[in-house]
View (tube, rainbow, N blue to C red):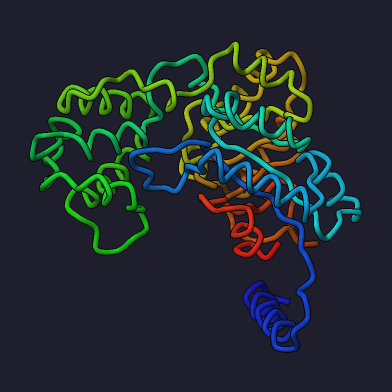
Length: 335
């Protein structure tokens, strides 16, 4: 059966269950988080407030069988995964994962995997997408320019704080500032790391926004990483070194990003690393092969669907969790 037909049948089956007033069968799911924080701007919906995260953990503990990602993947592979299984994951390695999320997870007795972008560990700088948002939304000038070879991007008036707080990058009819952010982000995403860092230095200089991020927006320190790895139920996974879109770069560059981040994680925590997450979800069949060759047992994408019998262990789907209460999480994801 082709994937399109299979998807249509799943939708029709769900409608039939609802029409009959019957509960739909639960399906295994992997959840993706980034930051446990409240930010002035959050274009990619990366932030979940500490209160809502606490509520979500409580709801998951009541309603689902929460497994570590390695156990989830192993039981999926051998056919013993419960229909109500859930695994919790975090991408990038923000400091709040260690300072806020991990203590709440330990208190709830729930496991999680934290995927680290190893080139950011112990760095004082922003993750570039967060720095760009701060620069574009606060710069008092009328333009920003990536480098001398590109045309300046027009900014327009500064958005009101409430407009900035509510805006998401997938919303149509953006303001001038929002359109400028998307234009610059789209160029920066596909730059080489040296070129991107040079462009960001230029943007920091033009805007006056410090290249040193506030503590709440930074990646973990090495000390935090090691303390985090010692907490019960917390697994450390690899998430590349520089956070490239792996599916857009050469095989050699992919291999280097994958294996170097795995080795770096193992060096920091002193034990094998077996889980991986693709930055932006970007991957090809070649990427998945390189992940397996590196000795990584399971890898996660950003495809928003339940884990099914046909899901591959090297390309597991995940739902991104937004800033919802626990009850809304359960309802939104059909858990």
